[in-house]
Image (cartoon, rainbow, N blue to C red):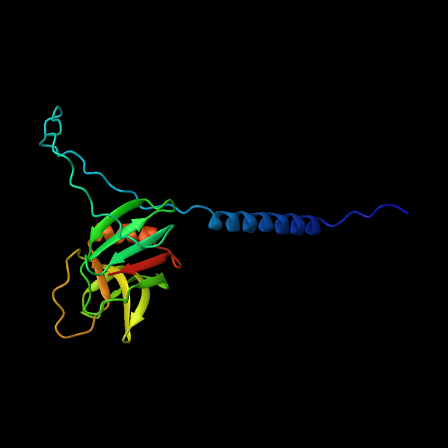
Length: 189
């Protein structure tokens, strides 16, 4: 009995299924691997400074230390008392830290995860915001990080409960790049 040849569509379907399985396996591996971290940008010398200008010998001001008991691994740390955020890489090193403007409703100290990301919306104070990372709610108010689209700091809230923790525009972009859904958030006093 002569051997039967399989139709070409069977071969193409089999190769496509195999390639799809390989891509899915690689995607799962990549998702479980290290995640990129936000880079700390260093200021560039201004055009008015002479090329031979050397540092004055004054030590650089030290950045506020990462709070004790803020967890381990890759995470976002928010201090309610200091109004400051730290972006921490998988090794426990701070990649960036910056001041923030809190809303009128503070999150309780504890461990959370980024629940939802939203590109842009209007804040409860009427300010257009972007790079929103929600991580909890308290007293019926959603709490998350965001920055004003125009880069401004928020005016004081007028008796309205707000949960938006506002960042500067560059800090908002860095946090957006760092914090995917599921990224851990630690809130300390």
